[in-house]
Image (cartoon, rainbow, N blue to C red; front, side, top):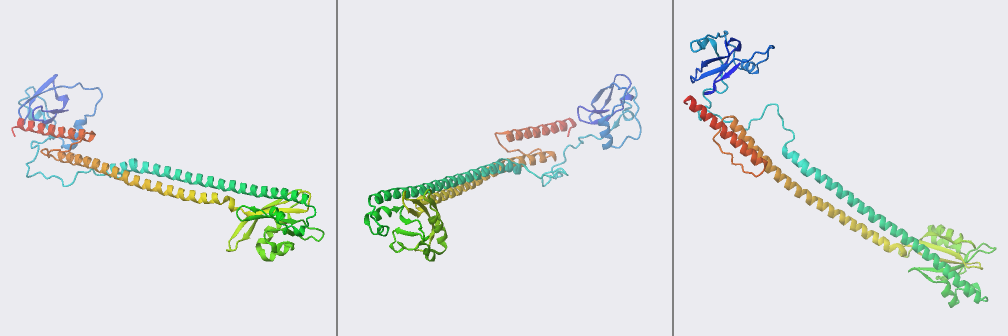
Length: 407
């Protein structure tokens, strides 16, 4: 068993089995203090004395087993085996002999891979920023998709309305021509384009640049001829000869032109070349004048109806791009702001922790006279005060031991 002097802290190793009686006493060889020991109860099963095992590792075993005599004061050298004290007689070396480490002490085998600042950066900066970035990208994409859907649907609706408007004009002109023909049975088809009243009815404006025209279903000769048109040069000619001037645009035009039936209209798109060289799609509706072999064709560029929506689509796309760029700018500002805040706070926090770590290292090597100047109103401040109290307690304990030993 290990016995410690209450006055000077000297440690002695004693074999409990050598104690006769319930109590025994001996004098400390350092401070002459009388130490009284009580014989412990011996367990039937042997127990491992941890302190003795530690003492055996730290000091060599005594050469002989001590004996316990009735006169303890006369036989102390044979009864007790002195062991090396944990705190030496010279508790702290002179100031000139002490050498403080130049760097903080770090336990061997302990490698710090992910420090507190890195953890704070990941938790309070990277994770929120990634969530914010993902949210911004998601809403930007959704906004762009919404703008695209709205404008596309708008273009489709405007196109359908334009097609319906052209069809209504064709039917309306056909109805007006029937009324005029019924009231003027003597009017010959060759005079359709020269009669100002009839031409005014048969050739009307469609949209901004389109028009209506009147042509005849083919007779026994199988020739398609136009009798009322805005261009008098094609009146009365075989319309199939237009393939030389229309070239690659003729098949689409001819398919719609000849698909009309007395009981059903024909309609569709064909390309048309403008004087400036641009090729744009036209929409044409052909409807038969009831009770006759004549057909009214109404045609114009379809973009005259849906162009405003296409312009709106372009504007919406540009606005979506501006919103996207603004979102990315906000994210960039948030990145700089969050990064600065987290970096500043992390630097201050880790700086305080490093200062306290350095203070603990200096205390561990016996430097007890310095002052911990860290002031903080949080848990770090509480830790600094605790270390300062521990420093004062160690210093007071050492001074008390020195006084007892007369140092």
